[in-house]
Image 1 (cartoon, rainbow, N blue to C red):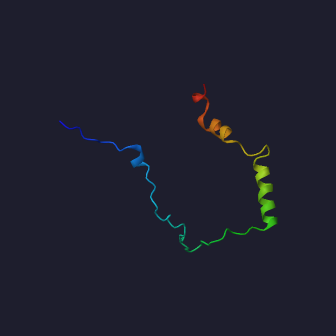
Image 2: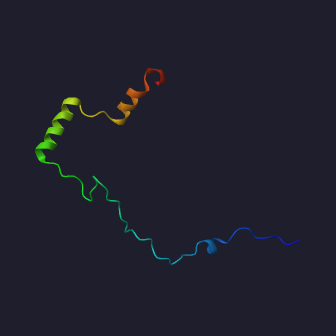
Image 3: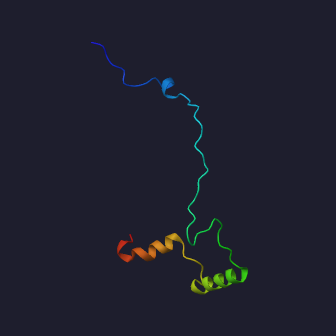
Length: 78
């Protein structure tokens, strides 16, 4: 009885195919309210926003661990 070979030799599996690379050119949709460039923010408006953030978080923004600890509560702490 002859045995069938179900696996390829490693040299057969590692063949390099000379295919063209896929194109990275693509078109993003441009709809109402969308633009191709990010919105420009004036420096005074950016500074005002930063001031408001400092008022909301006087000790800095909470880290991911601090936010997680605040969400999970005492019942899940070990």
